[in-house]
Every structure is written in C-alpha cells, then in structure tokens.
Length: 81
Image (cartoon, rainbow, N blue to C red; front, top):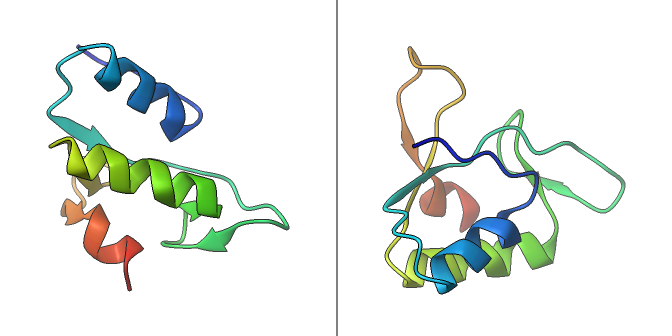
C-alpha cells in the first residue's frame, strides 16, 4: 500500500486511528521562510519535528530515501543532528 501525504501530521492521525504503518519514507518537504533544512530536499518546522518524534515513539521506522537507488538513511538520526 502506498500513502502520500503533504504533512506528517496526516500520517500520525492514521497511525493513532489504528492504521498499521511500519515504515515511512520522508520525502520532499519544501523550503519556506519558517523551515530548517534536514537534507537537500527535506525541510521542517518545529511542529513537524514533534510529529516525527511521536511517530518514532509509536514504532514507525522513519527513513529518508529520495529515489530507489539512494541508500535509505535513518531519518531520526538526521533529524536530531
């Protein structure tokens, strides 16, 4: 199953309602004046960081992998740097 969401809070809502999401590939999140850069293509605000922490605590494995040929990186270790 593939689920695409613009913001991570949508995924958190699904998990909290019992949708069994084991892994989440954090993809492109655009840069704005309010965001900070995590990778070249992933930019977050503080609220996003809190949501990712909750997802991690709920057992969702978070990775960052832009294309299949890229090595999947542990997103939480990138987020906490």
